[in-house]
Image 1 (cartoon, rainbow, N blue to C red):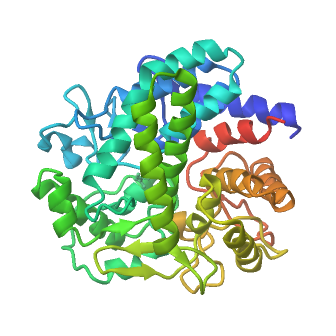
Image 2: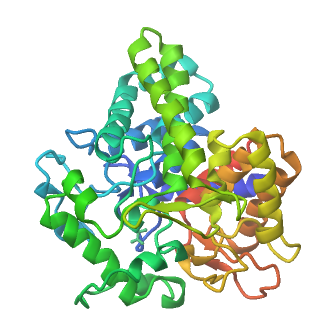
Length: 436
Ligand code: DGY
């Protein structure tokens, strides 16, 4: 497919997945029938390239479900659907006294991309004045969200926030969590999976993994989604390098946007203080010298989780590593993930015995992580390897279609696009990758 046809197809996918009535975009039909938090951010970047009104509506729809304490949930159930489990009746966000009164949502969040998304869409559109007005109307909501994180998700006040559920990480069933599952013994819940009616079960988490996922939600629900109780009791309490890198990148974008808006000195100095503390602690606590990249920190059990994943390189996107660390990280990336027989970048260390090239976040390539890696490598001047990440992303979509995730092995001869098809963020970020 030539560039024009790819762009045309990407726009068709986004437009078909956009719900005109409610103003949001599903990640893909059947498998994910609601609005997902970080998906929406990436989708807005795609829309900004050809329909800035939809980009704005996407963001407004997500913010319309913001809780009264600033929290922005991971799913907004704008509509009913019986094609997804667990739905609103399982999550019961209304247990929290400050949950959205107008929308049913989950009681967990996702990587906080909105801040940098606002800056990206501002940079993309032609009518800057119009977009800056939109940003002025919404930026304080994003600031409030960051404030909520630092006040309620950072019990040691060290500048790094925790996640209490693997679905908050965005990298839902990563092998990173396997050690945490070993510390838990949830009941065998009775439930009806819906995801495996849309997608081959070999590409999705196991039923036993769902027991862990549901159990963590049950613990949070038993305490009305109270962050302090969750910090005290959840067996899953992790400082995730991807999640914290997104927050730091979004802080940086908010500073730039408030500077453009003017008259915002208090907020800018608060953001700068958060940044300084967060970046210092991030480098002290999450960098792993032996592995040559960043890793997750298990806050419940007070130890680093020593595995490499695509999240290990996300800090490049947020200008967190020193140049010396960035040099080492690129060597690690090429050595472990970048063999000639592979497309970049697998979501989990291909040399690990936990690697699975087909299963959700246990190995396949994701376009959103590749988009971050491409931009992150460019930040540090690694343009050749950045271009390889970009070209690999385009090739995978051209070859297999707009799938949710892809096999990193070049040797695979059958269709190596997995998960949902006509996947919105793959379409949206392809539009951004093709922009020049
Ligand atoms: C799922 O159901 O797998 C979702 O990605 C959770 O966010």
